[in-house]
View 1 (cartoon, one colour):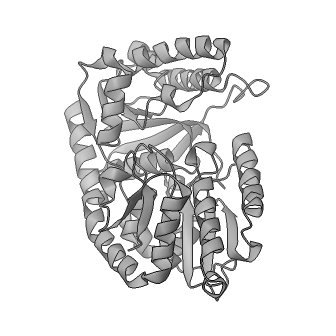
View 2 (cartoon, rainbow, N blue to C red; view 1 turned 90 degrees about the horizontal axis):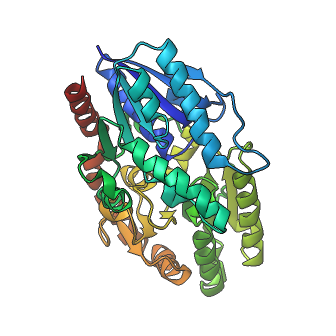
View 3 (tube, one colour; view 1 turned 180 degrees about the vertical axis):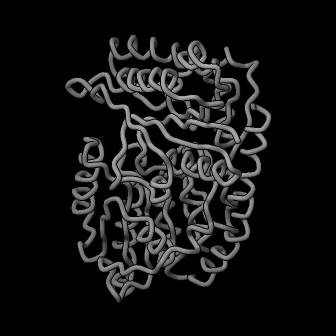
Amino acid sequence: MVKIVFIHPDLGIGGAERLVVDAALALKSKGHDVRFVTNHFSPNHCFQEVHEFDIQVIDLLPRSIFGKFNALLAYLRMCIAAMVVCWSANCDIIFCDQISACLPIFKWFSRAKLFFYCHFPDQLLTKRESFWKRFYRWFLDSFEAWSTGKADLICVNSEFTEGVFRETFPSLAHHELQVLYPTLNTSFFDASPRVDLHYIPSKAEFIFLSINRFEFKKNIELALEAFAQLHDKLDPKMFKKCFLVVAGGFDPMNKENEIYYNKLWEDAQQLGIPESSIAFVKSPSDAEKIELLRRASLVIYTPRNEHFGIVPIEAMYMERCVLATNTGGPKESIVHGRTGYLCDANPYAFYVVLNEVVNNPEKVTEMGKNGKIRVRMFAFEAFSAKLNRIIDTMH
């Protein structure tokens, strides 16, 4: 039995959190001792399976100071958590993701092996509008490259991310990278109960579903603009059978979530989308999310250059056709024209697919069935086997 500590900044609801929870479940299923250390955890805003684990919350610093220094404080919060782990935890392997700043502390003050999972280089997820912001980020970016190199083993979530990692961190060219695709816990999906989606009218025949956190980088406007074009160009009687659900993780403590959610509401009104044809759903439960996938005619995935993207995998497992931008990780998971559509990230290209769903539903249904076959390569069993092989080589 290997003692493994997962250190993660915020155990909320998102793709990164889904990955670490699945990794913890995979290791626990093989008899390893697994626990979590995090800077933030809300029992009401997390994946259900998280409650199976021992969770230690170390939250000693604010997330920001007057809305500034988010990244620096995130680094410091993780470093403090790392020091607590070094002093109080006896473990064999540290599983760290998202923020590498804490790795040097583990390297200096712990004998544990360091596993780092890179979802995407942090420095590529921020803007540099001013000279001071560029100077501030130069320091953090340099520290990210140096600290990431302290890991004993680095995994990435896709071949796309592997390429970006190599370009971003040329100083780590000697480091071997392993691609460990995120997975889907299919047994959890299979066991999910049916739930009532009261906000979807009974007359809705074509249900378009967007699932993403309410963050600007998720580009959810694209789904709204495409749906607005469908409203403008489709026969009104047919459009009354169409319904758009915009669902996603919403943290009331996250200012960006609130601002973006309100912006999307305003965008929908300005685009002329009838309120009777759209619903915004904050932080749906796992059962509600799975029910949405069951009911969807098409799952719309709007981010550009997404590192991997677990939503298309979830949709394909539920035999749902997926529409995504022809960028990033979805190019590895979706087979264009067979399990879904990969299109340019513009409203008209997305509208064309929405119109295809309405006019040729049989084709879309067949593509959904193909997706169920495709998703086998991302099965939990395959993910678990590869992860456990990696852990065995480290211990």
